[in-house]
Length: 387
Figure 1 (spheres, rainbow, N blue to C red):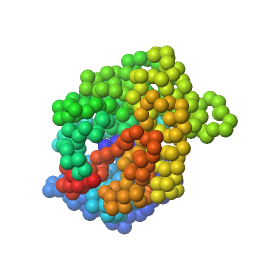
Figure 2: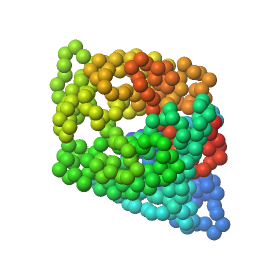
Figure 3: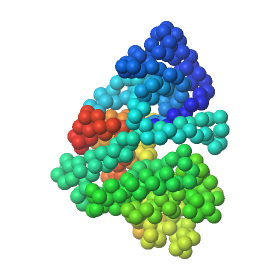
Figure 4: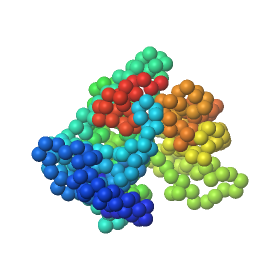
């Protein structure tokens, strides 16, 4: 759990004003805490903080409560969320951590904005949570093939996380420990598939001379070289962003096509061969989690994939290609949209988008919040019934 303790701009100010009004009308923070979480026997509220809670979908403004028995957070306003059944609901975002479950509490500040203070809270059951999530996914039975994922030959590889970061430790050592532990555990269950971390590609302290090429390492807290040298990691990923690559714009081609041509024809400084001919590269991904919020049908993404995939394959026929989708079903299989109802927000169609001629394989991103949040039976059941 990552908490930002410094407030931000006008929308936050309005939310806090509404919250303070609520505090006054309800009889103070003690009464509001009691109504929100129910007081435990012998429990006393010690202090409250206005803060942001960092979540997978973005920061949530709310109040952090510190009592004699626990740390608790509640959002200032209800959020629109989907239940494991697929039904939408407005509900307050709450997190409760008993003090005896605290593993560590690490304060830090933003290197670019020293007034922004953070607290990273790790629980004792954090490891168990990740282990259970991995085991649930790996041992799940594929409803199409009838084979457990860990034994399924249609699966090429697993990725620990999409773009893992650790903003409280810039050395990459904290991520290193996490990778070593999670990778070893995954391989203890599944020895049939390859495994990568999901890193973006930021160099770190293991090769300090290269940190100049992507100086944001201090922010993301990873070390591309040492992290990927972990025993159980089989291959690496790199996320390349156009802003840092395109120097000149060729007339008559789109920005995306110009970017692709720049990357594919670049000479690998180690192998001394163009990327499009490099045997150390397995595949290309068009983009990490493409979305189109202005078209929920998936057709706009479909047109984009058809055009860009065809252009890439016209330059490089040596490597496989995937889109980078998260896995949201769309109008091509309406009966399955219930399993991930956010399709209307992301504007993709997992089935039809991946059936494009030049696409060779598909990716799926599985988020803990939607499939197994702290061993909740309902969320666990939702993951098991997903098709």
